Amino acid sequence: MSNPKVGFVSLGCQKALVDSERILTQLRVDGYEVSPSYEEADIVVVNTCGFIDGAKQESLDTIEEAMKANGKVLVTGCLDAQADLIKEAHPGVLGITGPQAYEQVVSQVHDHVPPPGDHDPFIDLVPPQGIKLTPRHYAYLKISEGCNHSCSFCIIPSMRGKLRSRPVDEVLEEAERPACASYWLFPRIPVRTEWISDTRPAFGRAAR
Picture (tube, rainbow, N blue to C red):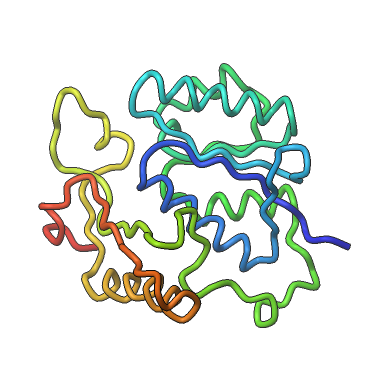
């Protein structure tokens, strides 16, 4: 019997992509496979963007597409800040969570499509750097989350909260993973790690 499959759509910025990678990594650890299509998936997760009107509409259109093709859809990401939009347009979605809601999304997937009972994480290994959605020559590393500025044109603080910097040792340890993994597999391909944050110059001012 094949393992359950999860369809996944990641919209928006690099920070959202890192969130998607983390969710997918945990799902792979739990024994799920990633489906290349809505139709073949047992459930679909849509990681949304809510930064500008065009991004909101793209998110709503993607949810609609997934609902029509599959019917079992979980929504996560920044559009959670306007969850009423999602509920009004697509009342049939199975759940709505905000950005960085890794454990909640994985738990919701477990609730609706239980993980395989015979999965052995010590045999079905996941790469040490986790699941990456970027080409093998570069990776994104999130060093902080949120922003302390209150610019009138920007809604990032309302979607992702106040600035929270990651501990330096944790960031450095994670930075080594894609480089080391790629070196052993593709020794002639250097890996560029891009450090992403809403406000990189403020990194370290609010360690969590």
